[in-house]
Length: 101
Image 1 (cartoon, rainbow, N blue to C red):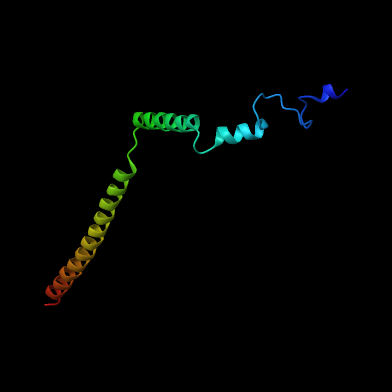
Image 2: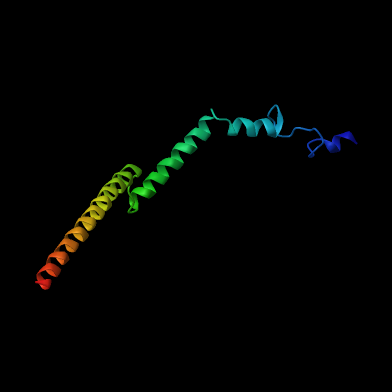
């Protein structure tokens, strides 16, 4: 009864109709130069970009630019706070001198 094993898993039979068996088929389907896989990748990226365009999001470049502006603003605020503290201390010293007279 050798004909019964034909096409069964592990029997060595090949019922896929493609030389090399399913392993080779998967390798060809998942290979880096597969035009179908490349097209699926392009379509997925286009779909994702379309979905993101409908959302209220910003690009990475715009985010990075705004982060840089925020950093400069924080630095400037810190400098102004330090200057304000210095001027407040000077004003308090003047007022103390006037109160001592």
